[in-house]
Image 1 (tube, rainbow, N blue to C red):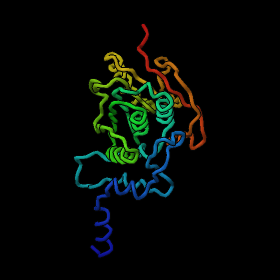
Image 2: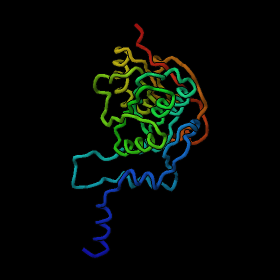
Image 3: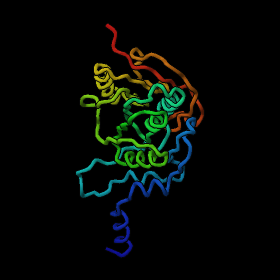
Image 4: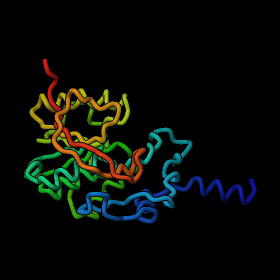
Length: 236
């Protein structure tokens, strides 16, 4: 192997430290429409693809990273965060689960609004790192769970905040039975969504609507309607 080829192989073999990468390549700035919360956010020069490359081709024990949903503020999470900050009594003194937490925007907002405890569920390993950095940047304590909670019983919480969890059919089909188990356990569920195709509209009661950018979605940075709903039990 030539010196050049060997050097490239060594470079590929280096493990990127996600925390160092995020701090060096993303911007810590107020979240769109939620200036009370600062997040590490992607920009055109972030080079996030480097975090998506498999860390070690010879080791199949860990799943490859998922697309970096955590690097952006999505509309559903944005309206949930805005909603609880505008109405802190919704979360004050309660144990809250931020489901599919991504950047942690919703959970951080809940913590700032006075939640007694916040659990953020996020399965992307890079997202977990970003979430921890974002919580630290906002001076809040959040318990981070990196396993899929939707397959089992709900955790011991009073309220579930589910932002942007109906972006795909298979994801939505996993979410609904879990949210039903939450309702059966006496846990309230709020959903934030800009009206995506797989939203279970018959199960939702509109609570509030905002115009916010869907920075991580197809809508780009232009504000558009997004809503907060109560997820309700199936009628009949």
